[in-house]
Length: 108
Picture 1: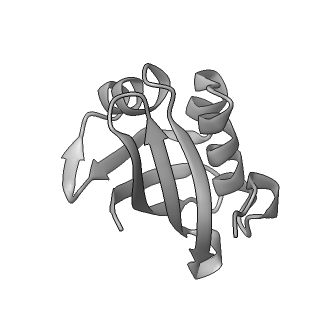
Picture 2 (picture 1 turned 90 degrees about the horizontal axis):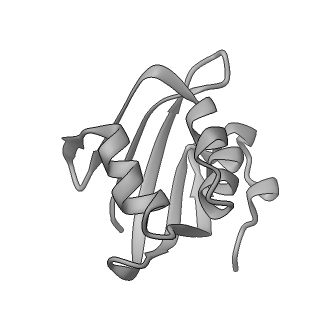
């Protein structure tokens, strides 16, 4: 079963998925706090370099399989032109103001 961005429990996370899938970098960045951070497979990465390489320059796409923790944890079939498709886990830290301060991804 695939969950569309509009069906996710947290609308901010849903907007994140929609921005990735729509290749809308401006909308994506608007969802993040100015000091947002991220990690990939347990290692902190430079957020802007990572999103360019892994999402926006390589046609990244998220197909959400499941969610938990109020929509802040996702299991996703993620694909891009660099790595192909892989099953990944995503964890989001959403501020009370409705922006993402950190996201973590890695193999599921």
